View 1 (cartoon, rainbow, N blue to C red):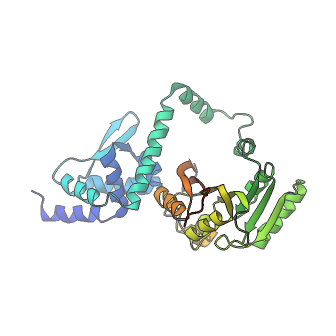
View 2 (tube, rainbow, N blue to C red):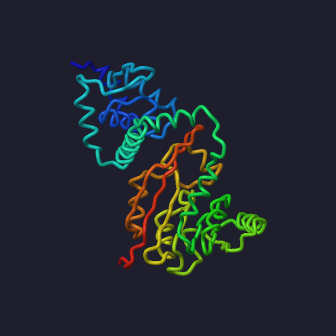
View 3 (cartoon, rainbow, N blue to C red):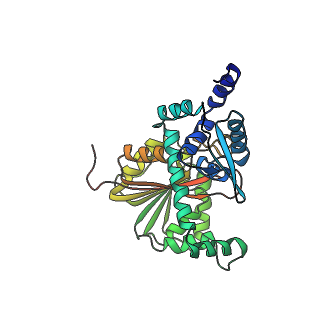
Length: 315
């Protein structure tokens, strides 16, 4: 029988969203702290603190497995309550996002289980490989993109705009900041690039004609929008039927300081949330996946989403 003091401590432990998310993940399978960091997109100290508290109230058990500590749900008198709470909230956006993160982790594990890729990964960690740069890879991959009319919404540092200009018939760069556009024009001129047109404007009300672009790119721009759904609707409006949108943005996180330092309006998006917004904006063939996790704290995770404007307009 559980005493009153134990019950009070248990309820306090469960009265936290992050701890419920951890318990939800451990209900799926045994996981290490680093796994939870990747899935929940949280730092080591936060995950460790929550796990320690959950262990104190006997909700979580741990065991050593080689150099790793693995965590699982603790069977016992409190297990029924935990499973009831998780069941009641199984359709929550947070749980759905975490399940997508768990599936991404499983995919990575499957890939890393192949001996060849294990060996290559080890070499990457231990050696500097000549010519291995992200810019070089991006420049190579962009050569495979279709030649067409591109719109780059939210220019940022302009690097992606300049890369797209190498393969596009034309690139229209839209940004609300005239200084950013002036810098882009200067860099394009210095590189001898003449197929970039700059347009000053916001991504939620594009000063662009309907059905005029083959591809729309939104790289780390959506989290600056006051109304992300409206921005995606505008992206769809300016695409030709069958045109494609590419969205790169941050996975939902808790780093509030970016609002002041970088004027972020939203702290990223969950995979189900971004997928739903694209569907509601009228896109088909929506695909959202995690692309990369920044190795430096606070370890921002990037999402990549692609979708297509239907050939026949939706009502």
